[in-house]
Amino acid sequence: MKAWTMLLAVVLSVWVLSSDARAQTVEPIEFDLERDSTVQAEEWTITVPENRSNPDSRDIPIRFVRFESRAESPGPPIIYLAGGPGGAGTGAAAGRRWDLFDRLRDVSDVIALDQRGTGRSDEVPGCESDHGMPPDSASTRARVVRVHRQALDQCLAFWESQGVDLQGYTTWESAADINAVREALGVDRVHLLGISFGTHLALATLKRYPETVDRLVLASAEGLDQTVKRPARHDRFLSRLQAAIDADSAAAARYPDVDGRMREVLDAIEADPPIFTVNTRDGASFERTLGRFEAQLMTGFMMGDPKNATLMLQIYHRASEGDFSGFGRLIQWFATPTVQMSGMAEAMDLASGISAERLALVRDEAETAVVGDALNFPMPHLQGAIPGIDLGEAFRAPVMSNRPALLISGTLDGRTFPEAHAEIAEGFPNGAILTVENAGHNLFFSHRAIGTRIADFFAGTPARADTLVAPAPSFMME
Image: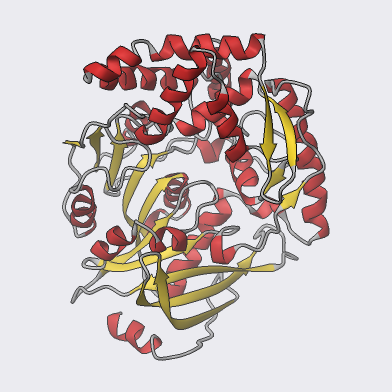
C-alpha cells in the first residue's frame, strides 16, 4: 500500500473509476499551515452523485488532503470528520489541530476530508434571503422561527434555480462519500476520527458500512438521535459549571448562583427588551430588539467551552446590574440584517431529525430549562421545512457494534453532555469513555495526553475507561 501511494505522489493527475465515484484525481501539493509553514501532501478529488437516489443527479466533487504516514507498516487510514455541520477537515488541519494530525502520522496516513458542502468540496452557493427580524419587535421564539421558515422557503427556491439538489445533503449521503473515499484509497477498512457532528457522521458510516470501519474515536460525541440536545442536560451542565466556579473563592463570590442569575436576566430581557444598533462590515447599520429566545440561543451557543462560558458569565453579571451592552456585542457577532443560510448545515440537521419520543421529552424539559430549546436551533424549530429529507427512525436507532471505540467527553462541555456519551457507549461492548475533567466541547488540546491516547488507540491499544484532569479554568475576567 505504501509503495503504491508513493508512486501516486509523483503523478500530477490520475483518473480511476470506482463502484461509486465517477472519477478521481490526485495531485501533490504543499499544504499551507496557519503557522506560516507548509507540509508535503496530496490533494484528492473524487466525483460522486449529489443525490444517489436520483439517477439524473448532477456530479459534485469531494475533496480531501492525504498526509502520508511515517510508519513502516501503516494501519488503516485515519479519516478526520469535522464538526458543525459545516466544518472543513482541511481547515482543521491547517490550524491548531495540525499537531494532532502530525502525531497520528506515526500510526497511519491521515485524511483531512472536506465533507460535501464544506471547504474545498463546497458546491452549494450561500443564500442571503430578504427576510429579517423586524427592528421594533423583540426576537421571540415565534418571530425567529417564522422569519427563518420564510427565509428557508426562499432559499430552497434559490438553490433549486442553481441546480442544487438539497435532498442530497444528508448524513446518509455523506456516509456514502466516506465509503467512496475508502474505495479511492484502495483499502478494506478505515479508522474514523470525529468531533461533534463529525461523530454523528462516523456513527452513520459505521451503521451503513459496518465492515469498512476498523476503529472509531468519537470526541464530544453526538448520537444519531442526539441532533437535538436535551435542555435538562444543559441545566445539569450549569450545575457542574457552578461546582467548578465554587472551587475558586473569588469566582464563587462573583458568581454565587449562575442558574438563578441567568433566569433573572432572561426575565428582565423578556419584560423590557433592549434595543441595539448593529454595524455591518460594509459600514451600514440596522436595529435589533433582543428577545428572550435570541438571548437563550446565543447563550447556548457560547457555553460550549469554559473560555466562552466565562465571557457569558461576565455578560450576565453586568446585565444583572443593568448593563446589557455585552449582549449587544454578541449580536454584532451573530446577527445579520436578513437571514443567511449555507444549505448544507440546515439540510444536515433537518435530515437527521428527531424521534417523536425525544421530541416530546425536549418540549417538556424546555418548559423549565434555562436556555429552553434554543440550544438546538434550527432543530426542532424548522422540522419538516424541507419536505422528504428526514432520514427516519431506522437511521436514528442506536448504533450497536463490536468495533473498538474510544469516546472522549469533557465535564464542562456545554453542548454534548456526559450522559449522551454514556448512551452511545452502551452500543459498543469494545468501547470506553475517556473523561476529561474541566474540558469543554473543543477538547483535543485540553490535556497533553489526549493526542497520545488517540494515537495509541489507533495503533491497537484497547479502549479503556479513564479520567484525565485538565487545568481548572479561570472564571475571572477584567
